[in-house]
Each structure stands twice: as C-alpha cells, then as structure tokens.
Image: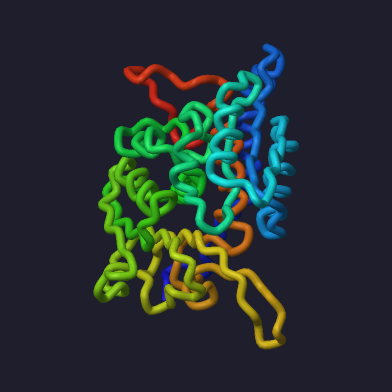
Length: 303
C-alpha cells in the first residue's frame, strides 16, 4: 500500500478553470483589439457521438469568450469536397482556428485531410509541423490530449525532472507527443504498446504513469508502484452489472488509487483539460506564433 492514506485526486475541471482564468486577460486583449478568436469545427454528417462532443466544445468556447462555429458538410461528401471546405477556411482571415471532427465517412482518410489545415490554424496540434514542435521544445500548438495529460502531471506538484515516466500507448496524438513533452521536462521516459513484453515490469517502475490505449481496466493495482502519479487518458463506455452504460478509464481506479500519490478520475480528469487545451491553442493561434528563433518559448499552459 502507498504511504499516503488518500491519493490526491487531480481534478480536471478545477484545473481547466484555472487555465481559463490565466488566459482570460489575453482573450480580452484580443477582443479589445478587434481580433476575436474564432474556431470552426468541420464535420461530415451528424454522427450523434460527434455532435455531443462538439456541443461540449461549444460550451467551452462560450466560457472562454471564443466564437465557435460548426460547419456541417453533406454526409455524402467525398475527400475533395472536404479538402475544399478546409482550404476555404484556411484563406478566411476571420477564422483563427480549424479542426476536423472525427469520425469521417468510411473510406476517407483523416490524416491527409488534417494535414491540409494551415499549421497556424491547426488548433488540435495534429499537423506534422506542430507535432514536430514537441521534438524541438516549441510549445505552441500542441496535441490537446497530450498537453492535458502532461499539464495534469505538472499540476500534481511532482518534480518531473529525473523521474521515471512510463507512457502506455504510442499514438501520434497522445502517446508519442506526451512522451516528448515529458522528455522536455527531463524525465526518463519509456513508451509501451501492444507489442511490449511484460507490460507490468515497465509500469511498476514508473514514478509517472500515463495510460492512453482505450482498454478499460488494463492497468491493475499490482502493476503500479507505491506513490506513483497516474494519468488515465482512457474514455471507455462499458456496461455495469445492471446493464447500464458507464464511463471508465484504462486504469482500474479502485485498485490503483490506494497505491497512487495522485490520480485522475474518469470522467472529470483529462477530458475537461483537453477542452481547455483546445481553447488555449485557439487563443495562441489568434495571437500568432513567435518566430522560430524566439528564445522565450511558450511554457505548457501558463506555467
């Protein structure tokens, strides 16, 4: 058991509120200068799950004072039609942020279309130019969920430098950039994935454990070191014993929490901070990026 009686719950909603408050003067300054941040989400058709996700984004934008629009394309739209819509938004000077809502219709590749978004308006941080910023320590338009995960680690008060960090999952938008951000904080980082032999041997060494694979309850209590900081990125819908749907993470919370020094709940952990990261990126995109040789690079959030 952990030496601490109760783990610190890393409240994503409270942290997201602090981020909004930190950025409020910057939003006010932009609006006063006649440069209101404007985020446009492009979706194809009206998938119910996507619609619910975008409604959450809209509510977040309203709280931040950011203009938000959902541009809905015909569900029969092909790749050329979606590319055309993105290019029109790229050329529109009033649009300062663009995102492509997923999923797309079957047979249409999301990655190529996301790469069509102007890197300066890519507020999800998925363009290669912005992903590359993680490697070079440029904390501009970062992948939102990776930024949220590492921001929550830093909010825990743990000294990241020199710590053993293990990231489970190596996706391009969460696992890999989260590993790069942790390296940027001078952690010693191991990245695990579905081909990793003896996953538990790695996770038991972690002072900081970030899990983002989409497998409910993957990380059990005996896979976690006493006193670890555990960041659960997973969002999984499962049925309980009564047949009702509930949302759980990739970490078996009841088993892991007693051993952790700090842990994110699901829901209420990484999710709200991901929305805050999207709004943070939208504000930065509206302000304009610093030159490549600017020695005063942006920190994670306003830390």
